[in-house]
Every structure is written in structure tokens, then in C-alpha cells.
Length: 433
Image (cartoon, rainbow, N blue to C red; front, side):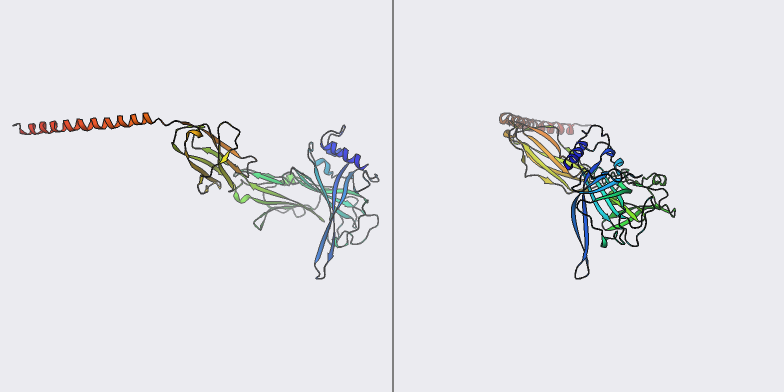
């Protein structure tokens, strides 16, 4: 049975299960139950031990038999909140599912939804897309057949057998489709946060916090109970639809940090961290054309310029690739670098340059500048080809002597003409007026 279920799930994730068109039709999902036990050491300090146990989410109805009886089964029964419908489109990569116990602390509160009991036991189920497309955290409510006071508290967790089957229902979820965001400077950015609750008129609080370099700032908060709202960026009518997404002002360097979306309906508190990074790709250019023509023993300064990048870390290298192919490019060790230039918009620039000494055996070689930056998956390359012509010593000598001869002729002419000009000037001076 376990093998068949795994095959079914694998085929679905590859989009090859006949009759299954969406994730809402998937009956079972493998998970890990991160179980924990809290003890106190000799000094009275609490110590938590974690145990990873095989488990699975099974979607069905109360009384359904476990599809995989060899693991712990969390039977998720019908509810107004269905985590599966928020997994949109075809899932091409593996999903990571993790279940943890959830403590509502003391005194224990009864969930205001239909069918809830004061002695309910709580779990969180977090499903992540391995490519960072989304993170969904659902709250699962389980009503034990034999209530035990205090068993929902982390100091008195109820034991779960290895092949236990727990009937649960999803009462609330919080999700984000932007767990990690990269955005440029002076851009409008929205951070996605969505929630769903199994009953209307919930005592709901939505809050956004910003964390940067150890400091925390509240950007927005809204309480449906008091009607009080502070901050901006989240439309109140959107909250009524379960959308708590935050729209940021135009981004700047100080926008980098961690944004936390909190959604609480007592006694449950859900949140997701969203990391925002400012990224600007470098603009790379050379001060030469795609082909350089020099004579043997000629020289030229070649500059590679990387402009407008952020953050600061950038790697610039020059390579020479000999003509004819078959040889690996060799890194130039005569490259010099300018200092980083910090611009008013917050971006940086850097130059890498060297003095090219032309020689005949380098003719046809390709030189390229390679720029690596965290904003680019692949380095940026700019290149040129060097053409070197032979130094013509005869023509050079001819030009030298021609120039020297021209100078001699001009000197001789001046030598002959100056006395004549002097005599004519004196004769003019002796003429009577």
C-alpha cells in the first residue's frame, strides 16, 4: 500500500496521473513529524529534544482507513479551509511537508469554530516548495477521544504511537508566495501574505514588522475587534478577503531586511518571514571596439568598466584566449583596479584595466573581461580580438630621413634668405624721404 501511494504521488508531481487535474485531488502527502519533548536539567533549565518521525497527510473523511498504515497518519477531514487549493498550477518539484506540535499556552482557549472543544490538541503543518515558490502553514485541530487536562501544553504533550491515525481539520492557514524577494532600487514591490479562517467575524489581528540589523519596526497593524489601524500599505478591504499583502514604498538600500507577516486569531498565531534583498546588475563595457589593430611592440590601455551594481561585492577578471582554439584561457596577472565608486543612487562602479603590449605571436588572440555579481546567475563577458601587424623598419627609417631632410632644407633656405632680407631692410632705411 505504501509503495502504491508513493508512486501515485510521484506521478502526480510529474503531471502524469490520469484524472487528477489539481492538487486538491491528491489523497496523501508524505511528511515529517518533528516531535519534541521538554525536560528540565539539574539547574532547572528547560531542554528540548527533537525527534523526526515518518508521517503523512491523508485528505478524506472521518473514519477513512489509513492509506499508509506504516506511518503516523494525520487524516485531514472536510473544512472550509483546504490547504490544497492554495497550491496552484502543476507542481513540478518535490514538496517538503513538516508537522509540528503547537502549544496554545495556558489557560487553554476554545477555538471559536464549529465543533471545537476546550481540550483540543493542535498541530501546524508547513508545506514548502523546494524552489521557494510558496510556503503554507496550516493549523490542524485534533479532538482526542479521551481528554486529558493540560495535554495541549508543551510540558504535557500527549504521546503519539508510531502507527497512530489522528483525525484533524484545518481551521486556519497563513501563506506567502514571496518567501524571498530580489528587487532593484527605486522599485514598487508587494510582499504577498494571505490567510484563511474557518469562521466569519473572527477576532483577527494582522501585523507587519520589519527587522534590520537587530532593530524591529511595526509597519502596519489592524485589529478587527477594536477597528484600530496603524501604518499603511495594506488595504482594509483586502484584509476582508483574506489578503494581507504589503505594498512597500519605492525601494532603497534601507529597504533590505526581513519582513514578518503576523496573522492571529486567538489562540492561534501564524507568521511568515519574507527576506527582501536589493539587487542591481552591473552594466559592463570596454573602452575599445570589438577588434583592436596595433603594430608589433605597440601599446594600448584597455579598461573594463562595471557600473551601477548593488550590493558591493563584485569580481572582475581579465583573460587571454590564444588564437586557434584548444587552449584554456589564461588569467592576466597585470590587471590593476580602481577603488569602488559609490554613486548618489546607492550603486557602485569599479574599473579593471591593463596595458596591452602588442606582439606578433598574440595576433588573433581574444581578450575578455569577466564580471561576476550576486545579481547574475552567470558572469557577464565583454571581449575584443587583437590584430597585430609587423613593424616595418624600412618605412619607419624612410619616414625618419624624409622628415630629417625636410628640416635640413628648411634650415638651409632660412640660412640663404636671412642675409638677403637683412640687406634689403638696410637699403630701405638709407633711402631719402
